[in-house]
Length: 348
Image (tube, rainbow, N blue to C red):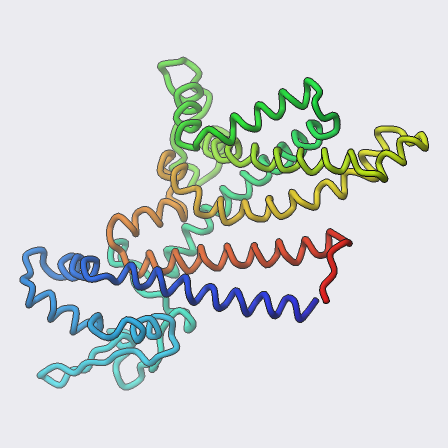
């Protein structure tokens, strides 16, 4: 098992390096760098001035070298102007050249500076990730139990009226995008046009304090979309288990249907949905972009949109690192958990 985990971790690290390099290369394309130079300098800068600004700020170095500097495995660039003043990636007002470290990248905890929000990237991501984490927690708390209950009830009696009804609901919720269900919920439950002003149509106030009124609609919007997929997977797994030979044997021996479901079928039926549930975590982290924008909830998804639209390269890279790490870690937990839950899986 330990060798399996170490091998998985090695694959994760290699995958993370490849993915972050791709994102780094795309965000550091020439048009983006030119836009960054004009944003930080002057919109009316000439091509020569843009080239000078990029050279003075280390953007003319080879792509692989800049990636290594950003990652923190290569020494940061340094420049000396005509007056003898030394500037560099790791040199700032707070850290003069004589005491500046050679390396200052992601591995050293230096994620860069947000050119739009004027804050350290690590500080911005920490705050926004915390807000999204709260949203994800309540979504999972609502979505997972409801989806499992629907899937189990539908799979217990395949082909029954209850099965058809719950399967129809599951397909309908999965087929409805978040921006559609979100608008519908706002219109019905938060608009004076309909008259049911039970909840708030914005979650901005939830950033300072969560209440039932300001947090229910975004939670329900996300939960509805993910609930159907988990319910359908649970239903398929439950249906397969209920037709297994050992279940038929238990029925022939006179074991009650209640005990068959709880003691024999349920544990095996939940093995497959476990992987699906774990994969909902990275989906929630990156999939809340639409909902957070719709409800003006300034979490991780909202920050990602702002970074991309405003060409905030350092913040966009920081968000990509978090997204990649969350996806790979949840995949590792899913693989390891599946091995423990399924006794038929053996690692040689």
